[in-house]
Image (cartoon, rainbow, N blue to C red; front, side, top):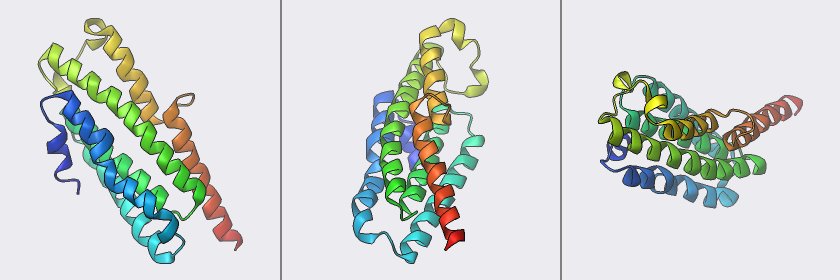
Length: 183
C-alpha cells in the first residue's frame, strides 16, 4: 500500500497532507486494533501481522533515506510508523496493543506538527527540496523550533511523547522474547 501514499501526501496544501497522515491512513491500522481482541493470540496472526509490520517498517525507513522532497520524506516516515504500529499489534500482547494505540495518537500529533511546518517552509521558501533549504532557523525561528521538537518526538527523544510509545514497544518486545526463552 505504500506506492500511493507518498504521492497523496505531496498534495499542495499541508492540511490535506495532514488529513491523509493523521486520519485516513490509520483507518486500516485502527480497524486491525479493533479486531485485535478477537483475532490475536494465534500463531498465524503473529507471523502474518508482525511480519507485514516489520517489512513495512524497514522498507518505509529505507525509502525515506533517499527522499529529497520534504513531504515525501514525511510520507515515507508515516509508512514506517504504520509498520511499527502493525508490528506492535502482531505481538499478541495486551501491552503491545496499548502501545500501538498510544503510538497512533502520538504519531497524529507530531506528524500534524511536521506537515504544518513543511507547509510553512514551502510557503515561505518556495521549495520543498531539502537540498535547497538552509538557514531556516534565522528565517523562520518559531517554525524551526516547532519542527525540531516534533522531529525529536518522532525520533523518540526522552521526555517527549514519542519516546513513551517507543519505549513501550521496546519493553514489550524484550519481555516477549524473554518469556519465549523461559518457556
